[in-house]
Length: 294
Image (cartoon, rainbow, N blue to C red; front, top):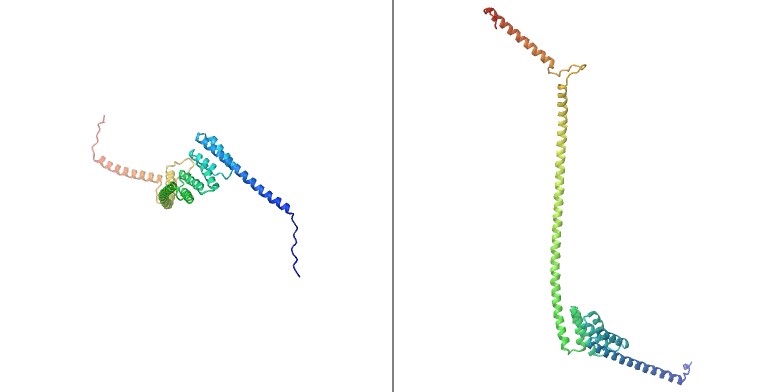
């Protein structure tokens, strides 16, 4: 079976020609429009340069912004606006415009200038590591520029100095932190020793207090016993018998008060009898005296 040829619908040649003409015309119009926009953008850039020379920064900024809005192919407008911001010490805005100029640039010379000035912004910020990379990119687009090469060498030197200072500062901070940690450890250790000594002291105090309490309790018991015994005994001795009270009973092996008085009275009587006998003997042998004493 033979393959049958693919059948295609015939497109009118006139229609195809008209389509091609339309595409070409649109491209030409687009190119013309871009060229016109670029020309207008450049004129606005020139106006911005003039106003900036006359120290009219506000109007110059307006002109540059309008130029940027008119055409994205005009790298001079963002570059010049970046320079205006840089001279006005508005470094963040300047960097953004230099970056825009570097992305818009179509020639190596334009890219070189944009990256060179980005490096200058990083130098102002003391971001020397980023400045080194920006200057390197500028030299890739123009290796013969001596000013960029000098700035690169300066950025490297300042970067090394910055890194050394940061290292010394970090070492100093580390030493201070180590000293503080050691001090904290010593204080914690001292606190632990104090707590341990306190615990031992508390235990000793508790033991002494227990001994004292035992001795005190024993002493109090003895004191109470003595107090009860002496007090009761003295109370009984000093107590006067009242009417109706029973006579005090003597303790074993101890004479009562009445017995003592009776014994003393008996001794006195016996001594008196002896004395009377002695006196009687003296009277018998003595002379009688009739005179009276006056």
